[in-house]
Image (tube, rainbow, N blue to C red):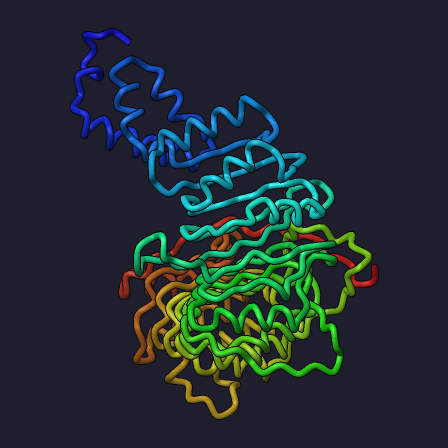
Length: 455
């Protein structure tokens, strides 16, 4: 760079802020070596970069047994000084004796986020055994298995920051398990977890129902977000009976099922739930492999699923239903009956029974019409009759409820609304003019063939 260029004369504090902003964007695009680029522009920028520990706090290595990768990671640890760091390890083969893992062990007390990405679930026990020391700063542990065979498998654990007492006296409540011969979920110590994500685990790696109950019970006072995607956990004892776990801090729940996940929903009681996503992997795009001989492809008991979740939805704000079908009308009615705080609904490729429960509340047994979704402000829907949508808008407009602010429909629905034989277009125009309703048009969702349940 030209030494007379204005960029070389920027004050250090401005350079520092610019470097931090640029590095955040680079991390989001997986450009982990961007700090090196900044430090090679000129001597002024190099001095500023080396004096900015934040730039070097994200450490990425794709070859733990590579000397070059080891030297690069060592430089990052040194330049980040005493800051907590985020570490991502991607490798085809991993060995706890590699110098890279020895470096991680020496700096384990500074690791805030640790992510392992491997290509085979059998590598997970080795990965978990690479850090047998205390990690007092650890907040997020994520292990992902990415290969063509397993598509995507990951589990993520997030802990709250520990700020009480000096660092030397802190003790991490989260315990890495002994994983001889596989992932032994029953040995995971989950006290203090705030986020628990179990996504796409293979049939051999998924936890048992009893093991998952113990995991939820261990963090019942701190868990804020829970995701479970893929094959449902199985009972190790068919005669087991488990009471629901009270999760007073749980605010977000996402369930994606490939088989019967209704029993899992029976383990959860979250009266403070605000955000609920239900996705039927047998009806919508499925990111996980279905070629697993160890999986019992039992159809999900959606009626039981909704019945188990209904007691947790009294304070729900956001509801997303994707591909939810094959449930009874009574279960759908009871599910929507008490959602007086709901502000957003997304219905995508749900069956007529679910849409009827929303659009025809007058059929609901012993539920007054004037309390149906009184605070609904945002609505997105596909696969609904124009007459039902028009009747819903008129009812919502005339009842003493909060005005609907946004409505998202498909392009096909919008074209059908303004056909000469349809009155929906007139209703939409009236709502837009009188109430300020904003109508957004989204492309119709792509349908996929359902996965066969007879494999």
